[in-house]
Image 1 (cartoon, rainbow, N blue to C red):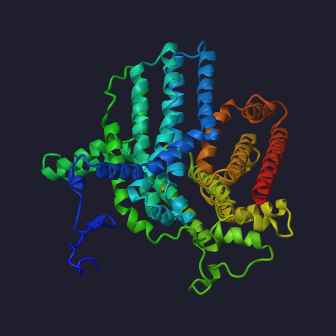
Image 2 (image 1 turned 180 degrees about the vertical axis):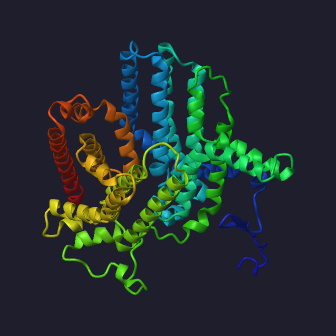
Length: 568
């Protein structure tokens, strides 16, 4: 009221109000508009800190976890064992350094491939499945910060596992047969491949709602990536036969792209690096194309992040291929629960139920028809018969299907934290575990049936092949290795959220040749052992005993882990 009494009115400057990233107000301090303003410097610092906050947290968490350092130390132990084996056998074989380098390089390629399928492909989908994407966005993290923190951090962690090997790999030069240029070229190629694969998996992880779907699509890209060096020259030759040469503008672009595709694969690049007299540059077309492709994929994942995550509902349990009861093919639906509800549940919702069984039957019939047509068209082609080729393809398919089922048998219970409720039922842990395993085994019955019928009915003496396989101790030896692998996958799925299958592959590939079990298996089922001295049936009985023993040990470990998780 001072202005009523004639006193001068005091005008206070209006304080600017913030709304989002905009400033509203009639007054701003002149210092705010200068480049040396401490306010602008603070805003820039907070912006960059927020952008790298999740990435910094992930790297610090990785540095503080003991299991990550133990895993890196274990990988270095594999290198030491390979180095020891190369040194011991150096008198019998030449160039021990080259053999040591080749084994470690291919082991790294297998590790990166498995990491792309399991570790990188679950970067964003695990947040969708746990329904925490919205919480990350509410915390002030933009899509770029989330991608850096969830995917780039994993890429850095995996790269550290490869980089830590480099000083030890230089020991291969002292053993002879390899040069430092080959080692540097191999590791640069592997790191470029890891960059490409991690960002391809990031794209599918952003698009898909579940980690399994992202891993499957990443695996499909890997198959095309591995086949590119072999398919690109064939396509280029076919286009030239059709008249599309490299002289025209469009033709030159097509043939130039195919030439780059021929040098795209790291597997093809490693094969060339391991050749004697390798002198190609370190930054090859494979390195440049893989790094450029990784950058493009990361930018694409950044562009599509918001549309594919704003309405994500990955945490819900899906029905998969199980049909509803009101569908037209009602007889393929799940129907009512069986007297054994856990068997019914896992058969329908993990193994795919009757609908997926029909799909597998059609696929095996098409496979058999395609093989028969191919062999009839190429009568003079030497090699194995159609029944043996069909049996090999079917066995590989069954092994892959069984591995996926083993990785998923306890996945939903652990992810949704329903294992404690399941253990409250008046049933024992062995009953629950065997019921779930029986439901998954029932899902394998159509594949096994197609394998037996196709082997017997296809031309080439299939019945004789089936009988010989059943009385061959080495076949049962492979069954032993497969059973150990399946139990290992199921056990690891109780320790890791996702990636039990790739982790089991990484463990089994280097350890199987060095394990005493493999040596005992060769002694029993291999030529010159019990198989030849005592006969095939004692050797088969010995392998059966080994199968039962190792299955019992792994099942006790799985039951103990289930009890531990359910008690939390």
